[in-house]
Amino acid sequence: MSELLAVEDLTITFPTGRGPVDVVKDVSFTVGRNETVGIVGESGSGKSMTSLAVMGLLPRGAVTRGSIRLDGVELLGRGEGEMRRVRGEQASMIFQDPLSSLNPYYTVGLQIEEMYRAHRRCGRQEARKVAVEALAQVGIPEPERRAGHYPHQFSGGQRQRVMIAMALVCSPKLLIADEPTTALDVTVQAQILRLLADLQRETGTGMVFVTHDLAVISSIATRVLVMRRGEQVEYGTAEQVFAEPRHAYTRMLLESIPRIDDELPADEVTS
Amino acid sequence: MSDVLLSARDLTKRFTSRGPYGRRNEFTAVDGVSFDVRLGETLAVVGESGCGKSTTARIVARLMEPTSGLLEFEGEDITHASGARLAAYRSNVQVVFQDPFSSLNPRHTVERILMAPLDYQGIAPKGGRRAYTRELMERVGLNPDHAHRYPKQFSGGQAQRIGIARALAVDPRLVICDEAVSALDVSVQAQVIDLLRRLQRESGFSYVFIAHDLAVVRQIAQRVAVMCKGRIVEQGPCAEVFDDPRDPYTRTLLAAIPRINPEWDRRRRAAG
Image 1 (cartoon, rainbow over the protein chains, first blue to last red):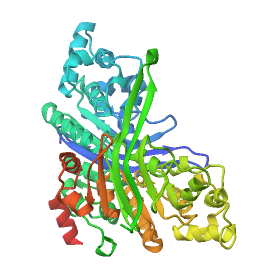
Image 2 (image 1 turned 90 degrees about the horizontal axis):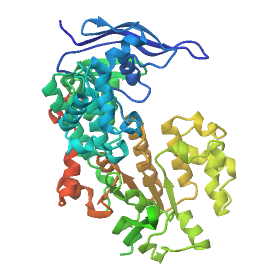
Image 3 (image 1 turned 90 degrees about the vertical axis):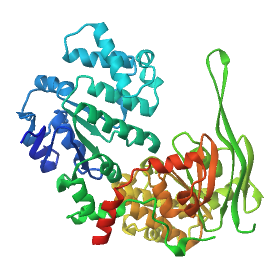
């Protein structure tokens, strides 16, 4: 099997005043090339910790056990220097809030250039060309002019596009998207989801999509991992998890989603 | 009509700021908004960020005065009411905010938080502070033995129940929910929506329910007003607006809602 990402029995433990606490327990999943795997769960489920572990970005003091292999290479236990090379080059991550991930003092063009030059030997001019192309690829109009603008000059949806451009500029094999559309308006969310799906088709990047929103997951993921309190509740194809959920918790989650097509009970419809 | 509790006519709110060299910048946040809230009903105001829905809520709560327009409560003009009339209005209209932890004083116990609106109004709580606090906590599904705890000792969903109990303390006629369930996890959100509906059934007050999530709105509102760029582009009964939207913006908004593959959903529901 040539899985792109293979996470096996991942356990993340934090030391606390009351002894060690497992925030993630024995989680296993794989991501194929060109595939999107969704990790879904409520707050405190460990979904973000799992994705941070893949990037080697866990807070200090976290102890990890198990195995995380990217393209056959073990990532757990690697030093910070090595992980720096992996990040951006092999695997990239985008977050919920692009404004806090971008440096307000530099133009977006420069930030994308720096990302590129950190991993590739090339001059300023070539990097600028790549940055402008990257902005064009994520659908920023007038990319040449916009590369000279600062993050605050972009709308929320455009900022997330800039983050995606930066994440993909070195053509990583894996993209981890942690709640990338949660802070966006629903019409903008739809555009960003379409963009991610299109880019994935073009580039063949494997994607881990972390969210609390089951409906979003169902529109983008081929396989789904449901987490609760650090444990893996259910893992299967999107069709199986949504059509034939095996676990009571998954069923409860699915039943809790408010639906646009469900009306109020008749006795509450007045006037 | 006699069953209208609150009536808003042509509400407009302009904000002005001064740019460099004293240049005036004007921004119209709410632009000629009119609607009625009937007795015992829930009117939802929906829209995306910046559409003016929260400004509308603040005007209705009289936390802010409109630049122009008219606000009537039970037939009385309260657009610019002050003093005793404003205090009376505030005992009839209460607000539940999005983030319970920033709208509840972290250094006050639940009892003190719940009794604050009564203290402000100078009303003596029925049966004494302790008994009335217990009654309110029970109504919103909180353990009344926790009346002397502080907000941070509660989960997000429980803290929001405290916010709801505080709104109910003065027995209001209208409760304004400004994104009151938006920050909650989906399973907790469903419980809080059920609670809001039950409280309305029990007490017969009206809601103005401000939200960006149309699916949530469908669970609670009888009528809905869709806002875009400060204006109401469409309003009517939920069934009409959601099933047969007239305005192109409403259609775009409805089409953008992510949905679970309907085929999968049907199979899951059929399996029970």
